[in-house]
Length: 384
Image (cartoon, rainbow, N blue to C red; front, side, top):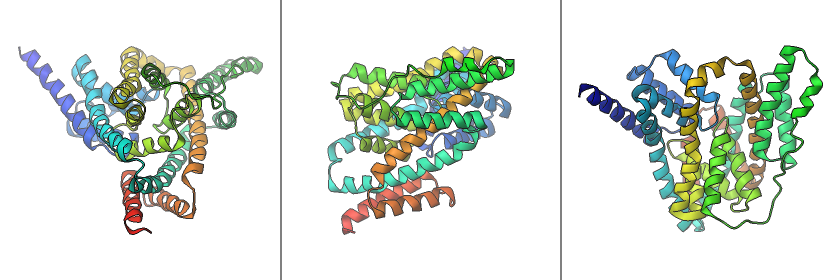
């Protein structure tokens, strides 16, 4: 009986803690990790520093939203398999509900003048935040000449329309094979076998008929291969829903990212927003399930193998390639979305001011976006 009570207490602790953090954790994955560390390591002492670093390193080796996967790992570490489920659900649920309400508001009033002014002000701010993320991630992603070369090739090929997922996986394979060939001093010509010659082309196509099953499996595919920062999600969303399916516009992608930024919890709940826009509440629920289900499954499947994966030079090189490719994809999408955001001089000025605030003043991105919302409303009210 005491053992059951102790297990129930742990499960309650896991769910309530991550539910609270799901309502209050603003600022993106890096901020989420810092909050997790403070709450779980320093305050509650569920695990020690080294164990936390091991879990953090594990999430870098597998696809999926990093901060969500850390919450899943921490839930499992403290309370077993049920803790794994409750930790992830607790962190995801608040953001999903908040985004669902905002999506309803956007769908009902998105064409109203005041909303248009708000989005006009928010879009340049989001682009500035993305550019800052690119700059911050460059040192970890571009470690040497090979990773820089991979990033440059991905940028060029993505501009030509090569499929996003193909480029991301090919980046990892190419760098892993390069590292293996380098270590074994074999003929470098074997690398050509792994170039993405047969890649699919993501050119604009005729609009396909909407279906909930396609929506679910598209987000399931994205959730299963999403590496790197949450901003990489932009590349996948644009490739799948704007270019391949023709269901969304660039503006709707930017709006979804803005909603993900201004709400607490994982940025990937942009899937909830877009799912609602496309298919109402059923679409929102299926999109959210598709986006996050792979994270739970991948954590369950890879947890026993993580220590050996971290020690593998080949897998480490694969991850370096994926990270470099991710940065390249983010660069392309940031450029394309910037063209849609910086439509006039005031928008450009707003973007530059936001860049200064987020880079040099180190203002939390959430406050900058909220400030842009107020500016947009002010322009509507006062007709500036």
